Image 1 (spheres, protein in one colour):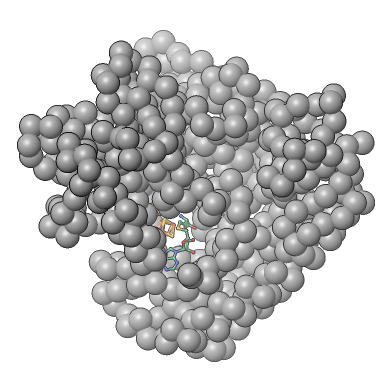
Image 2 (spheres, protein in one colour):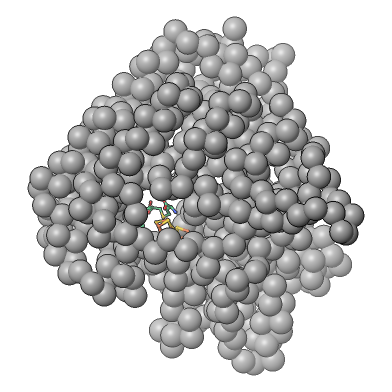
Length: 483
Ligand code: SAH
Ligand code: SF4
Ligand code: F3S
């Protein structure tokens, strides 16, 4: 087990790792069953919905049991070594099913497929198909190739692909929250990070298709969308667009849509539709974005702003392109413009050459911000990254571990502090369903993204908003009653 601390939220929910996606075929049945499970970030879960939609068009039915599947896909993550180890172990579990059913097609999708390319076929004998994140439209052809006795690889990255026209099918969701991808790839080249290599160049999706998808979700009863990208603040799309998101006629003026504009357009879909987004990059988050969040009640007061380190020298060799002062300035701007905003972060401990003193700057940054949540990781060297080429991974495992444990303990204090501060307050909660522990309680999230538990009332059902008076808390949950 790793010591990564993950306080689950919708975007970083650890309990979803390895979740299977189930949906109905939309095309004519082809008699074959698809099993697909996902690892990694919300982008991957969102991509699996696109993959399932592409294959549903071709008549594939999905199953939640890989043992009776004809096609088994695993959508993989490369972000840390243990993410890859987990996938390799899972592949071993598929081997038995393939032995019993030699006609079964086993495919590796996503970031690990992109990182390892055809090498995957040499390393893992049971794998028939390797497909990178920009090549999913090719899946039906690739499956045909495998049917004809070949093994197939498509890991071409694209500068344009956004799957804008594919509307993801979402049948195993709760019908209330949905992810909407607004961009793909990343151009940032943080030195520790494998994502620019596995996901390719940054590109923004047609703003009109984003708004149309959100409208469609709202009409189907969804009440919360999370706009996804590795760096949403650098969203930029230019095209033809009219107010309210309607497409204009050919020849109309070209409009440039930045992230603040897009947020506003999605917020205007309906005041009853909550809008969340992830991830913001400290170098790019603008006051304009903050003012837009403040202006619309339905854009949630919650920002995930990964700091990675509180020390300017470490930030520099991480190639994050901001320093400690810049980050603090962005925090001050958030506090000034959106006083009630919850803030969460990502931290890496034990990055190359990090001294005890530099680590301590991360600790004092946590004291400065008092984050609501944090996702904390030990540095894991990734082959091919700038850091792997330039710097030795020279912090011993036990020191990485100790530093991680220290910030985990610190964060637990601040999470508890933030939760305690909500006692006696009234939170507007979107009911998501019954609580995991008891069907006598509902659960849902507050504007600030805290999980809230309260007794079921006959007058309200999932998908509706209620005001909940917070009476007590655990370190991760607010507990109260409807008022
Ligand atoms: N695009 C987002 C992060 C995506 S990856 C951003 O820039 O903030 C999610 C988190 O994983 C990162 O924020 C970082 O904290 C962590 N991470 C990425 N690469 C890592 C590595 N090599 N070792 C440990 N943690 C890593
Ligand atoms: Fe990785 Fe940095 Fe891009 Fe985030 S912004 S995905 S950490 S390269
Ligand atoms: Fe992992 Fe790829 Fe996401 S490496 S974190 S699945 S972009």
